[in-house]
Amino acid sequence: MDRLLISGGARLNGHVPISGAKNAALPILASTLLADSPMRVCNVPHLRDVTTTIELLGRMGVEITVDERMQLEVDPRPIREFAASYELVKTMRASILVLGPMLARYGRADVSLPGGCAIGARPVNLHVAGLQAMGADIVIEDGYIKARADRLHGARLVLDTVTVTGTENLLMAAALARGETLIENAAREPEVVDLADCLMSMGAQIEGAGTDTITVQGVETLSGSRYRVLPDRIETGTYLVAGAVTGGKVRATGTRPDNLDAVLAKLEECGAKITTGEDWIELDMEGRRPAAVNLRTAPYPGFPTDMQAQFTALNAIAEGVGTITETVFENRFMHVLEMQRMGADIKLEGNTAISEGVPSLMAAPVMATDLRASASLVLAGLVAEGDTVIERIYHIDRGYEQIEEKLGQLGAGIRRITG
Ligand code: UD1
Image (cartoon, rainbow, N blue to C red; front, side, top):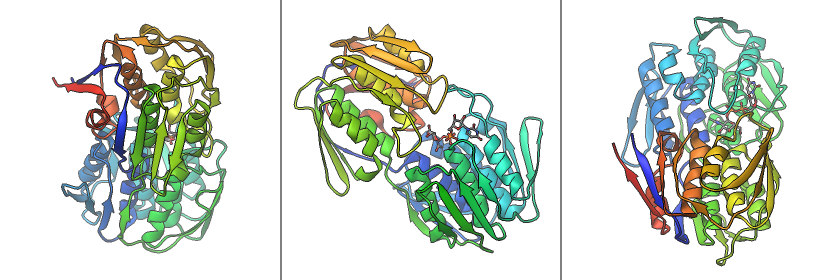
């Protein structure tokens, strides 16, 4: 299994190109199931989760061609299987995103329940309840969600928790349902907006994406279009934090500053000088050590839970005491135990991590436990004295394209050890 070897101590400096957003690419690829003609999707990141989605669609019979620039041509017409197996769903929870579109377009879908997940129990009850309110017959049998419907109908759906993929599943289903659907307490994440924009390019009628109430007028058919996935705000934020922890200067290019307000505000609070252009963000620490920050994660436009682990790494080496509270997921602090082994002074109290920053960490062999936790260990490795080896980096390959090359270009001492 691949490992990453990081030799800490380099101050990062330079430009880093940002890839397409994983969390937008996955629902957009699922949405191709709704179309009655081929769809072209560009700026798709080359990631393990994308490969898993391609495999998932491929096993259903969908024809996909990928060119060297990761432009995907997806033809849903040869579909013949309406199932997502446990084997694939267990490796990627987001496989649940095929449920809504398959059911809306083909009237049937058997999707394995995702089961437990390293970052706490992540149920899909709201996906199921929403589809039932739209007229689906759903039974849970042999670990599968088995859904049937002649044609879904519009409904008023009030989500009791803000759920990103739940909103996306219901939005895709509503696009082909008969009549009007209202999704209240909808997720406002930029990736939801990107999916809505993509669906509209296919002929869907949607209003309010990006607010907490989305209105969809169902249409009879959707056709394939050409769509470009938005840049990844979490990848962007991760490289900016890499600049911050090393006292460096990093410019993220091909990104969207307006999707990172909460993250940029915290980076400024920790002492970074931030400048932005239309499609770039530059962070300059001017050689300083960051100051610790206090934050709480929350649904967008709040501070993203997917940036929590990276800021935990920042606080670990920052000046002063910082408090980070995780409100979106339970049990999302596994990285803290690994950082403690590297000399971090962090105490966990329920869903809060309180850290007293230390001037530098010490290298140690550590283990990646989930996607963002592994990113935070890379950041910790960048500021540790000595060589840090990170095991189980398949987690990081799920969400970061060529991380060792991108960090290497910024001057980090990092290399992949294969096998
Ligand atoms: C998505 C993102 C993930 C991010 C998360 C929160 C994708 C592919 N993944 O995950 O990177 O960390 O949003 O921003 O876009 N919940 C329920 N019932 C449900 C659904 C969710 O109770 O039916 C709860 C979850 O347990 C969790 C909260 O809602 O506590 C938010 O989860 P959700 O937004 O659904 O996360 P994902 O969509 O899985």
